[in-house]
Amino acid sequence: MLDGQLGTPLARAPFNLALWDVSDPLHPSRVLEKVGVTPSRNRNRRTHFPFVVGLEPGRVYRCVALVTELRASPLGDARSAHGLSVKGGLDFEDADPSSGKRLVCATPDPDQVFLALRYVVGSRTARLR
Image 1 (tube, rainbow, N blue to C red):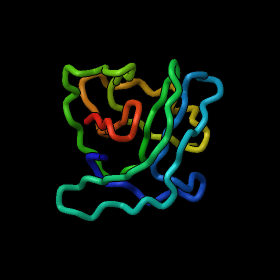
Image 2: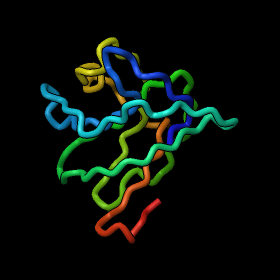
Image 3: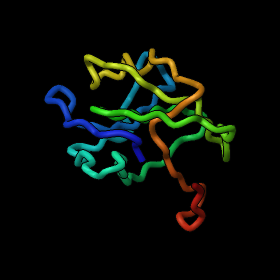
């Protein structure tokens, strides 16, 4: 869930939501991208976007979105569970969003986040929130 308003995808980067593997900062790679995810229009300005992807152990991932509005939420004390950890939220501008270079250099804000991700550990019936 994005606590904000998704922007329209750009011609030079035809997606507005992407999951990147930034384990090798010299060669970031998009693991998943959502092309044409419809911008939210509801009153509370939250966007839900389901996607399924397997995360590899020992890798570093960053989920980013192209937004026109953004609302931060405080990052609570639960920063890690089941081998996953959250370093903080990202808020940066990227002139070349297809490369991932600026994403690698962006510094997470350790006190707030803008995306909330739900994930499944093991089987699809064991849901964590």
